[in-house]
Length: 462
Image (tube, rainbow, N blue to C red):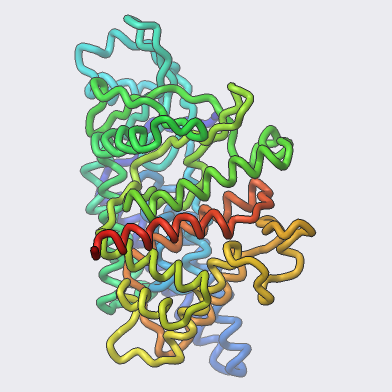
């Protein structure tokens, strides 16, 4: 990273003023432009207003990017989870926010590291150039000198924890001022969930505990590599973990692997997701598959898990309802699927049957890769061996289109926040499968997890 900055601007007044001016400017220009479109036909007016909103959203997001820090992370998370409460042009612009920011100068990070490590600071030799710089902190390689142990230090930017609450309120306030945010109870619930996730992601002691827990859960499974967490060095603003050298799913090294090896990595991605749902009730909710690396040191590809800040625990009843929804959708059982969705809290008491059916059909589409021989599956999505071809299926985009159409239904209700988290995680899993070019017959794989879940439920009843 050639470009560096001295630090994240921390003056609350200046940051708030810059954000407010950006929001005010966008809303004013949109209102003025809307007046200019009044003489057009309804269809022309709708298209023109959407284009205008998209331009103003891009300007607002550009300002968020300039302010950096928590504003970037908040914008990204609203782009991911705000699809039900924000206009499409806004979420699309927010999703373009780049988490890889300019590297904060080492002198600033060095002071933060000294504060976290205290007297043990002298035991570390740290590479002053960051391995990665993101919105909340950056990662540096280091050596623990007493043991000559190579590790990674994830160092939070100074002042980030103190600013997260006020920065979140600022972004929400500006979006309300611009009339982009809905003000109903469901929207408030989703905003509360995003705020909770942000708080979790800046607590590095919690992230360390979650990393250790998942490492224990996957212990003995050679397909996965979970870095060791060095808890004795961790603090709320510092995470110390084993150094892992690997490749992203999209790297030329991985895309050039034989199909069988890419399929093995993809199956490991899927099974990790299935274990989260059917066994652990613990899930990494961040849909970004950049949180994983492929390690090829042993000749057999391993999936390395790197980030545990967005790991969430879910209520057993909610996850059982999710399992029922998945099982019903695989069977194309409308009654079972809608019953599961109802238990998830996806329907209002007065919800119409047509709206329920539309929601169930959305779930039918999501489980398309796991339903063998389905006539509705696009022809190009299945190869001559009957394997699902994730890169050709275009499933995420098809599901997004169907979801957007459903949201236009007057009887549509915002899904519960937990459902929003899980569906966004699913889009990340499916995106990883497509990036790997996986060609797999996964129907029997999911069926085995469903069978064990049903058996466990029967045992509990007896």
